[in-house]
Length: 128
Image (cartoon, rainbow, N blue to C red; front, side):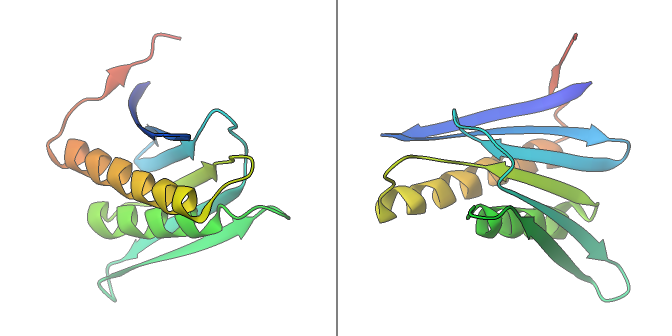
């Protein structure tokens, strides 16, 4: 299966992106060393209305929903294909600046992924 893997790191904040196709749909995981299922968002493009929309489910006590929903919407809007974003980012005793860094890293990773997809880059081959 072809995969895209990209990462960003700044201080204590480190974010990884793993993306792969499930048929013609896209699965994107955003996580760090404390990976978990915090929130799952689905983004879809409505050709009749010429707009993207996204919906999110968040696990109790988790706050990954904002990143998941934001990125699902951005990816669906740009690619015009269905996308599922799974987000699980955790950092003990997190500061507001670190939360902002997680958001920034997620934005940057998704922007890079969209660039790779637009260029038709094949991703990496997983031989497992």
